[in-house]
Length: 226
Image (cartoon, rainbow, N blue to C red):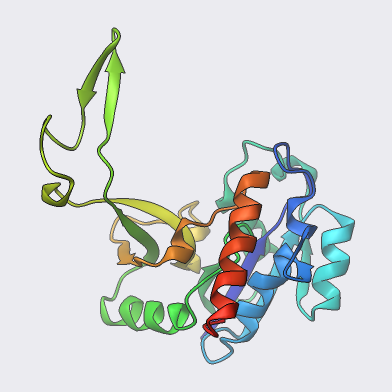
């Protein structure tokens, strides 16, 4: 049975135009995710980029991965990511594919051992999917009728005493192919893999996000972590 990685990369981007091909540390943004997949050949048998954009397609081919042309009808702003993954599986038509690793190009920075550790947890917990989460230490609330209503704490409570709350950070997803074909990336018995790393705070959607990623890259390369 095989594991494949799919990197979905649309050409359209409203808040940061052409973000998937902007150069980050000397290479296109999408190339960081391609390199991550290529460094994990022990767990990934094939790498695909799903795109509707000719420039992204050319970059992906130049970096040595396969490309699935995404139809315009599933390349819109409001189309869920699972549509692209499902389309890839339907085009590839390989019944030996057991697991799909979703690698989002907008999360270019990942801990080195992330996929190795994720697959160990995925297999040992016998789950149909896994996704990465990060603990949040902020105090959340709602504003109703101009009144602030605390959500995860009581007024005056110390931050260190908060009940743990987590956010989906987008670093990595692993799903059974059969789940994706049923339109699910995160299934009912999904395993939440906690990753409390600074890289989990990077999700590029704006110029400020991009600048932050550049800052972290320079910082970690300076101290020889990357």
